[in-house]
Image (cartoon, rainbow, N blue to C red; front, top):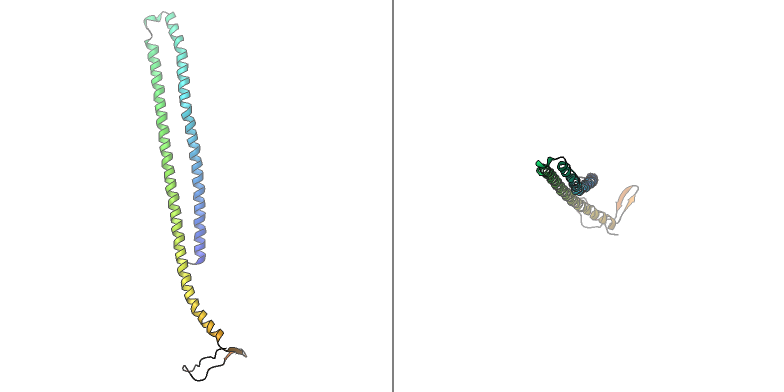
Length: 190
């Protein structure tokens, strides 16, 4: 993998991480807004139940008095009390259903939050693994490149130590007398 490909891959990974973080922040804001709405709804339920009970309690004495005055004493207090009990049971059932819905919504939000945390952690781990793999590859690549360049450096060092010059565009050297290597002779040091 080339340096440019690694850089491009790193940039794309960084862009994906940035997009993922923006999405996480947006979802977190939505979760906070939903939590606030649920808290407001939860706070409003007892107030509504109290108002309903107050309204019922305010009308109950008037109803009883009207029945007594109308001569309906034979019917007694049982029907209004039964109606009041029925309304209380209905209000209790509504409160219980609201509390159950609220609990379910909170569980869903907790599950969503947990999933987002796991996805974020997996993305970070994948990005780190990718960066480590890229770093290992680059280290290996440059280690081989250094070994290759070391041979060229030794050759240049030998050229610098030899007594050579250019003569009409050609390489000229002062050679040592004596030892020969085939058609070649060692160049005299400077």
